[in-house]
Image: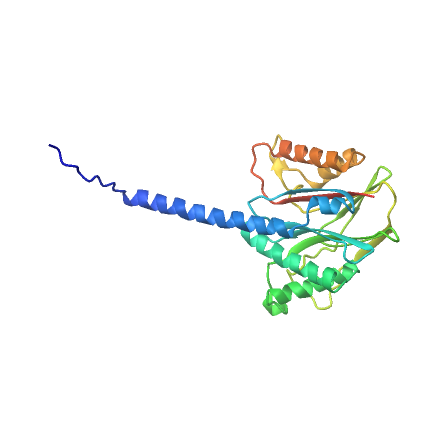
Length: 276
């Protein structure tokens, strides 16, 4: 008669380390996935924006969470605000900055009801430095954000634009114009009483406007593994601007994916289009 024998499984030190590492990675990924759900809940839905504006949003984080974010508000009637924001970094650090940026925009526009886009950016500079405990040049920081901000007045049809490092592409009557923002990121350096400039123009039916982060034009790919570049993006926008917003979005996605090919996505992608 045979006795049952207890069988023990022994792991080598290396196997234990690998198992522990795998478990930790699962925990971290699970936490970041939960953070993604929080970040997505804060972002306005594309449908919410499309109810007010004929538009599209091409938003594709590099990692699970994103340092790019878009922001929309219709609380300061008759003004509609739309922003494309590119925070320092991507992934978790960028996502933390995006939460701060989102909170600041809510405070300045939805609570304080600022409507001057230049004032909004000037105050963002102050609020961001306050949030990061950076009050002067002796407390410099490399943390900050680039932003393109539009105020579309539905009563007067006047559009005002202010930006930190990001441009506005305007296509009118088949002609493309690039309106450049102020060449200074929000929060990177301290300059007392610095003013972000603004541009103002009367909207015309059929105008197409585009604001975006640098992720799309900076993507490497193509036959020679080079950057896509803003020049090529302009050419694509000029070629497709008469199509519907949904068609434009799909074509921009396809162009990006074809260009990227087997290359890794190097940054978060955010590109917003509006048709008047």
